[in-house]
Image (tube, rainbow, N blue to C red; front, side, top):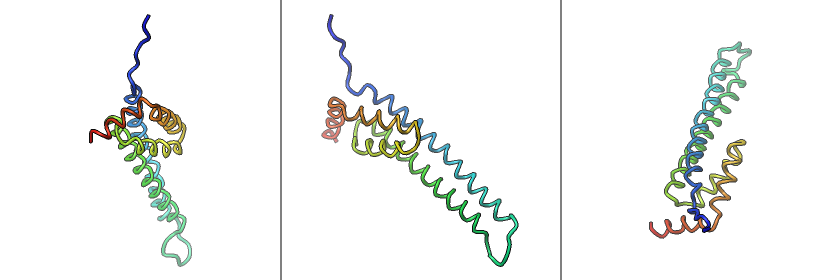
Length: 136
């Protein structure tokens, strides 16, 4: 009985789909930042005391909401780019960096990041990326 031959990088398509799902989830999490922005607007109209032209409490919500939205959009774009590069089998270093950054974003990011790093570090998968590097 002959051992079955497994094609190298067969899991990359699965990881690409998971990166797309993670990017969409990052965009959905962006709405949490919008909630903070709305809360900042609501606190602007709340009882203002003293001679201050604006309330510092609402400024904290504006800044936090804005940073949260910006971070979520940047993470989504990076994740979508990693999915694109996984499909093209190029820029392995970029995919590894995005995987490490995704490890900071919760349980899905941790699992996806670690498994992607392990898959890309395999010699046969690295050879796929190197072959595409020399083509371009």
